[in-house]
Structures are given as C-alpha cells and as structure tokens.
Image 1: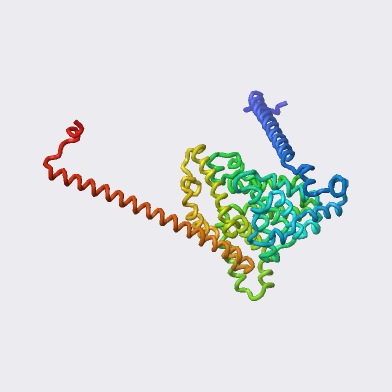
Image 2: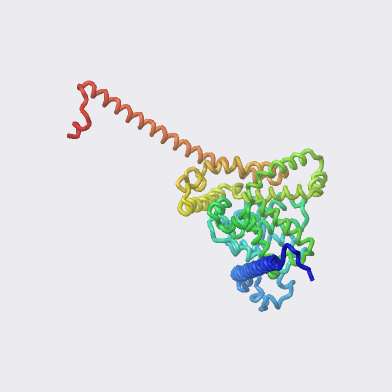
Length: 453
C-alpha cells in the first residue's frame, strides 16, 4: 500500500504529527488556563457579592417585617411587605424630592436609601413592573454599599444624580417622551452611574496603568460603573427587573449602557450639536403633540436627549442654591486635590492647576471657566427646550455671579501683589543706580577683593 506521498515519506509525517500533537497540548494548556481564570473571576465575584449585598439585618432596618409582623421576610406575603415598605418611606414633599433645588446635606445616608425607593414608588414602577418589595430594598441598599467612602463621588452624589433624573422627568416634564419602563431604567441607571468610583479620573487610570485602563480602552470608569451595575442585576435577589420579558430586559440593559456611558464628558461635547438641532426643530413646531411625535418616533433622538439629561444630572450641583453649591464645590475640589497629590507623589508629575492644592485660591476662577465652557450649554438648551427646567439655568447663573465676584477679588489681589513686586524691583533698581552714581563721584571704584580685605 502506498498511501504516503513519495516526497514526504515517513519522516515528514512524523514531523507533521509531532507539530499537531504539540499544538494540541498547547491548546489544552491554554484552555485550562482560561478555565482557571474564569473560575477565579467567579470566585472573586461571589466574594464581592457576599460582602456587598444587603444583609438580612440591613434589610430589616427598612423592611421591618420582624418588628411589625413578627415574621421573617420569607414568611410574608408581598402585599404585607409592600404596605410596610411604603409606610417607612419619607414624604417626598417634606424632603422636596420633586424640586431642582433639593439638597441631600440635611439627610442621613440611610434616609437617602429610603428616599431612593420612594422615587420608584412615585414612578409607580414597583406596582407596574411587579418588583418585589424585598428585591427593591436589597437592590437600593446594595447600590448604596457599592459606592466607596470617598470625598465626592460617593453615595450622596449617586443619589443626587438619581433624584435629578427623577425631577427632570416629572417636574421638568420630559417623561412624556419616554415609556414607564424607560423612565424606570433611566432613574435606576442614574443611581448606579458612578458606583465603585475610585476618586480619580479616567486620565489617572491611564497614567497609573491601572487594571481598569487595561480592561477598557475608552470611557474607562464609565464602563466599569456599567459592568458593576449589570453584575448586581445578575443576582436574582437584586434584580429589580426580574419580572420583565426577555425583550424588555434587553432594552433596559441597553438604556443602562446609553445613560451611564453618556456621563463621560468627552462624549458630551460630541453630542451637543445634535441636541441643539433637536431643540431648534422643536422650537419651530406649533403644537406639543407635534414635538412629542417628532421625538418618540426616533429612538436616536430619545437617546441623545437621555444622554444630555445624564450630563445635566451629573453636573447638577453647579445649579443648586449658593449655600449648597459652595459646599459641594469644595468637596469636588478636595477630591481633585487628592488626585493631584497622587500625581505628584506616585506618578512624579506636576498636576494641572485644577488638581493642584497649592493653587486652591484659583478655585473661583476655575469654577467660572467650568460654568462657561462646560455647564452653560446643557442648562441653557434644556431651559429653551422645556421652560419647566429654567430653575436649573437660573441657579447656574446665580452661582456664576458668586464665583465671578470671588474670582475678581482674587484677580485684584494678584494685581496688587504684582504692582507691589514691580514697585519693589523698581526701588531696588533705583538704589543700585544711585550707588553706582555715587561711586563715580568718589573717584575710581575699588575692586571687590579690596573691599573685602
């Protein structure tokens, strides 16, 4: 039998077979390594969820079935738990949850968890989408625990963004462009938008070669917040969307992606012109019905507006009453300065003025620049789009006046120092000239060596 090619022979077949077996072993080894990595990831995720998830004791601090019914949560009917939950939630009017000027400062972090649940009750999301009372409570509590205890991008900021999204939809009348499910998803995404923030920005992740920067090529932190949010929803006991059908759930995840990634300001600048065109077109229309039809029939327009809403929510501290804005601005500045300290010590780099605590006096000037070049557009356009959102633009302008006044005082101070320095230099120069002139009148000048001797 001659089944071997003449030129190849037995030696060639053995060589080919050896290569094939080598690749097989290599592939098996690679497969095993990938399996181990996947297992390690699952174990790490399991450990994370164990420490992160709302505990039974934490659940009872809000959903008080033991105290009210002498029953554990598992032994209660949904109607019983929903009744207890709603009784525990704060009055939205008392906390001004429908107001653009809402402030979290007088409210405890635990009360903010209950306030977050209250917003979903106000949207009628729990009843309409059959969200179990214990699942909503666990999810909201776990989201709060997912935020790190850092200077600014903490749970309070996360809550404020969720509350502002709710207020834009309800008080700002933007809800008419979105379905009930979309509004539910948008507020939930707003609460999650900065979960597990590290207190440093995307550029720092890249400069420090952080694992997140290696994992995500762009919108580094935003993609991490999104993945973290999706991980929570993978746990059935935390999945507030568990009773949706597959298509609805996929739509919710898509909306999470649109909303959370939109908080990357680099993307905001790219979408501003598209938003302005929508506002311009809506202004020319004669009726509200025409505007609604123009927007709701085009998913792209809805998502552009949603992205701008997320930016407006994320930056909303700049629109708050001055007594709130001035305090929050210092929190933001302190977190920036902490990053600047890391850049100086860890990266051995000089931070930009915004991140440099040695230039803290420039904060008012930096705030004016931030308002002019970043914030004004989004609030001006929204107030043009919906007059109900005008209070945000008014708040922004009032705060600009305050920061500009402080910036002018700083500029005057620096101008006075410069004039004083210039006068000092002129005086020194005049004295030096007088000394040289006096030396000429007294005859030949002596050398420095002679003077010393």
